[in-house]
Image (cartoon, rainbow, N blue to C red):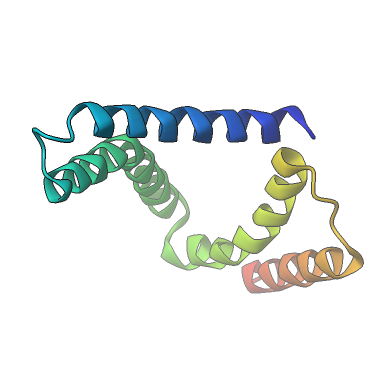
Length: 114
């Protein structure tokens, strides 16, 4: 396996084992509903900064390019997904991935023309 895959597996194991240890330590003092809410708050505290950065970046792009030009780039998300899965997960794209990316790029290019 690639290093990134091992890193994701290790991080998942570390987070879940920490979750299990905290739950075992506070089992009698904290009820299951409160523990679930606490875990949800922790997950949101970890993930929300990334969500805010994504919205701030998108707002910046819209103000710089305008809504019509920025909206055309939304269709690039599947193409970026293929590229990121190849880069981080080691998944090799098939011919239909390349065909899809070519269609996406041609569509975005055509919509960007005046």
